[in-house]
Length: 131
Length: 77
Image 1: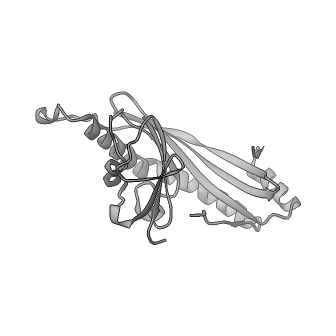
Image 2 (image 1 turned 180 degrees about the vertical axis):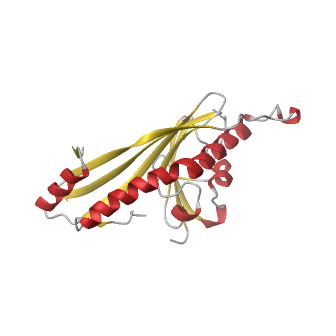
Image 3 (image 1 turned 135 degrees about the vertical axis):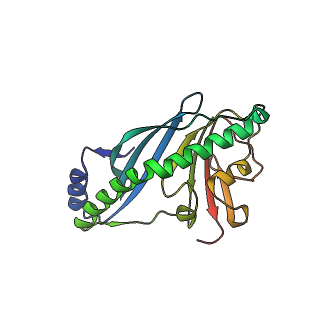
């Protein structure tokens, strides 16, 4: 379990004290949809963390303002009223991804950029994710 | 059904998922397979090296159920 810090500055001070110079930055976004799929809610967070060795880890989690968007209700033509469950799920995924990319991804990106800037200013480098 | 999706390598730039881990809620579609997500995710079957479902190697025909965690690894990084 990682030790959590209340602000990015507190995390930076801890890393300085420990002479840690590299962090990871990861974003997580969760969506929920209304039963009809017309409303999509996004919740996001950015996690800045570092491993200190010996299984010790420190983190700062920035919660990102939730965002709700209203999409046009899927208005299926009569011939498609019998659309399969699979097709509905695929359409729902496509709708969520479209809204995410057009409306929420930039919000996440702005927060990531601000945090990255603060980390770089503090002399910390950001490790690329391990593949 | 809730599916948490993350992608690696160049898929962070080219797929619809991007660099953040994305957790989506979908209507329950009995028998939905990994392959059924690819088009919406903007991922081509040919560019995939490995798919990991709930921490284990999976095939494109693997079925998604309940809560699933899915990772896509490309052939070229």
